[in-house]
Length: 205
Image (cartoon, rainbow, N blue to C red):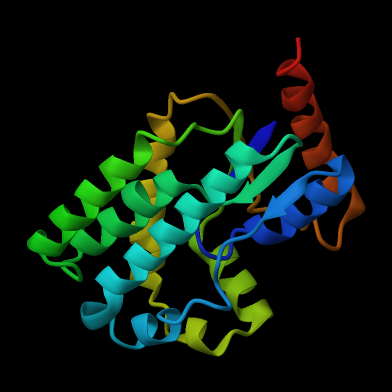
C-alpha cells in the first residue's frame, strides 16, 4: 500500500500524513525540508538557487521511492516525485527562474528516474486557495517562508489544477480543505478519514 499526499505549500500535507500514518500504522515518508541546505537561499534568491533546490528535492524523492518499493508494509508519502517535475520545476521554468538549458538537463534526469518509479496506489490532493495557504504558512512560522510571494503560490496552484485535472496514474481523492481545520476540529478530521477509508478499502476489493 503506497498512499501519497499532494498539495501546495501550506495545504496541510505533512500534518495529514503524520495523522494517517499513525491511524493506519503506515510508515511515513516526509518531505526533506528542515535538512534541505538550499531552501532558505532559494527563497532569498530564486534565480540563483532554483536549479540546485529542484535537483536536491528530485534526488531526495527518488531515494524515498526506492525505500517505498523495498518496504513490505504500508507507506504514506508527503508529496510525490511527479510534483517536483510537473509543478515546482515547471513553474520555476515558466517564471524564468531556471534557464532553458538547466531545465532541459533537469527533465532528462527526471525521465531517467521515472522509469524506475511506480505511482502511488492512491493520491490524495489537498485543494487549498491562497488565503488558506498563507494562513497555514504564517501559523508554522518558518523564517525563510516569510519570503514566499503570493504570486508564487498562485502560480503553483494553477500548475496543480492542471496536473490534477489530467492525473491518470491511479486512484485520486481530492479534498477541499479551504473550510476545514482537521488539526483542531475532530469532525473535520473524521470527515477526511471517512473518505480515505472508503478509497483505501476499495483498493482491496
